[in-house]
Image 1 (spheres, rainbow, N blue to C red):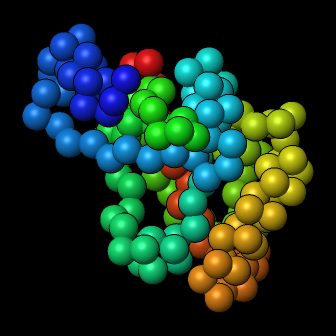
Image 2: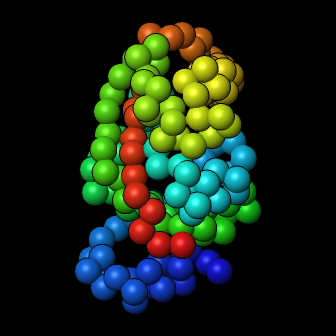
Image 3: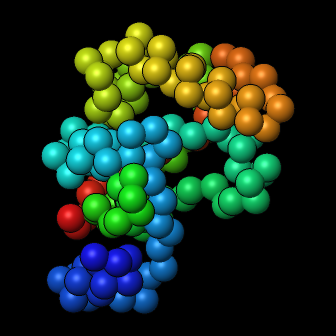
Length: 146
């Protein structure tokens, strides 16, 4: 199903969102698996690097934003609504946030191991060096539709 048809089905079920706009994107690594965690209710948070928003000329997420989460072949999987956005240094990301991300064993240690590797690779693509003082955008969301 394409993105427009998916959105139309969502609006048909939830007409109060008819005038809303949305972005469509996929989680950085293993997009289909992570989208499935959202659908299962295990993943209700994500983290992104603040510095990369300016480089990519993308707006920061804000409470109330709607997003269509795509799988690895860019097919829509679900629609989420942002419920909270915080800007915190990487080293201060909490165990609760790591748990809400729903990945691995859901511990802060697992989260840090996986995300440090991911952010080092992402920063390297831009000729930057990642460190634990980098600001992160910690976002929580609810799944509205799948």
